[in-house]
Image (tube, rainbow, N blue to C red; front, top):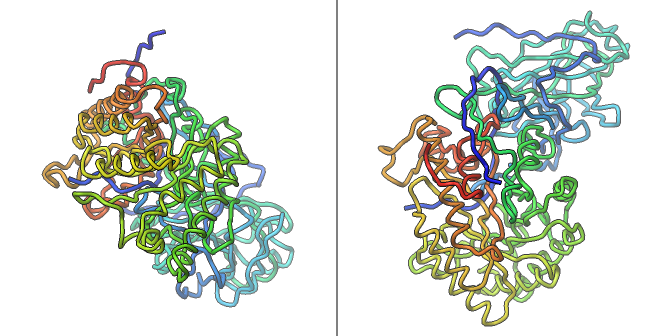
Length: 620
């Protein structure tokens, strides 16, 4: 049945999202506020129906410098920092895209991990099934946890359900919810105090604090934020935090410069294709945008996609950071969630040269090349075998970005630990593929790279490599085209030609990390700058998405289509915000994805759907 599209703009009445994060490869190159006060209400009070609340993991703890007396925290002696998602792009209840409002992001904090004692002389925290408890032995003693960057807390609402002991109540002490920018401890929210009269011993009470600083110090995304609660006055006794959540301030819609919410009138992208339609998502590497806990992220993913890629947590450093010690818990939770929603997973990535994702033990390898290859194969075999048992990890980026951008292109050498430790040889690539095939005979195995869509010297080297593999029966099934592209580059002609070269080798083609940046920092920049996401820019991007998907359909026969995945969901969480922060002077002006900062549809979603349905690509 032919699909008739209906495009319309709806008056934007309220609410949106703030977000940021990432994962995937390199890009193509050629007034005074009122002072807030804590309020207390019975814990049984209902939370606003516009908020979507689901459990969320606590972010990992990061060791900080010494703190002021009101904010010192006892850090773990061996804390684990969040791993950055740059340069590889680290991704319920939700309103329909045709409604006039969107539920805000509500982060519900994990009460089982990530909390620590706060204040000089604190005795730490006690974590159990009842929550997080601390002994309020003096003023400024409390408990804190971290929200990892990028996160904007200005005008956010912190809500905690607390329970105080009779000793604390009798001490007449007060409680203070607070927030601080890590690394700049003087900057914080200190005006949220709850009087003792609002507390009842052994009774759950809900406290709230709105972050509302006159100088908007929390309107930033470059620092982690510490939030917590502490006693004031002359406290004694125990305070227990039963639950905690943060509701982020709705942000302005990015769907158009007129402040309207756009509907693409697409019920579900995945229903329009007979190959996987995927999205890269964040997990515990981004507390704000964790697909397991962010209701808006879940709603978009579950509606439009039937495959997911983990932006970071299935990479080597996350799974085997020290030799022989594999940690699968986070990745298992992600893969199991996908299975529960009848989604497959594209594994990303078994081997990637990028320094920040290579475990230290591999960087410091002092054994023979043969032993290094054995260790590498052990990693590949262990990981693939583990997820093979899950049944829904159907494909892998076995090796990611092993070729240079030079002309002529060659294998990465001095910037690849794998090349160096393999005896200055590219043999690690084929050995990784052989190990992956042995562990997962039915999985589709890809080599994945960026800029090969340009039909250039790198594309030539790619074809040379896969031809050699086929001649020597090295098991490779397909090529992943990352496709971090711009509005004007590369050309559709070159994209099509590059894909056709892979098709002619009998291999599958998968678009693995698609995003389309409105601004190109290499093409006539800054004269070419698009300063705001206007309707014209949005519709031009719609056409570009349509043309790319159409090129894929035209160039790649049905039997060789591995699928199309976008690198993220919301513009607020695109990795390009970090990649181009210098060129774009910290402005977030890439707008590269299918959904705006508020998870509203963009015309790009309509363009993607048009191509899948055979509708002409237009900027109308």
